Length: 140
Image (cartoon, rainbow, N blue to C red; front, side):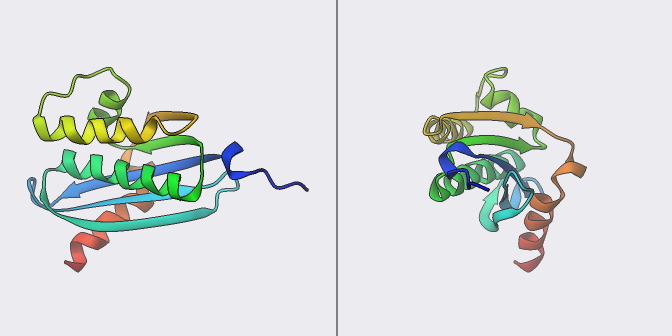
């Protein structure tokens, strides 16, 4: 069986972010899952005080950076933030100055792939990334 080069494989990127309380101490996380349903990489990290939306964007940015680091060119991105997904897909405008910076950073990263699709999923389908965020917040 031939191995498909990474640049031809599609990676699934699950991201999450949250603050407790909102705004407050925040964390972001990502999980990369390959075409064989193996977790390739995952991480969660504290981002200091932030809002939920900033934490969500940071999770997306960290995840896209990990995809680039691993050499993937096709990304299917999943997250449970409808706002961020709609902003990334151009359905909603970004009004807040901080969010505009994060949105542009995510768009710049996305432009480095041959294809990126952004999909909304319910929180229950984003359990691993959600659990990573929760663990970071509990460990602080």
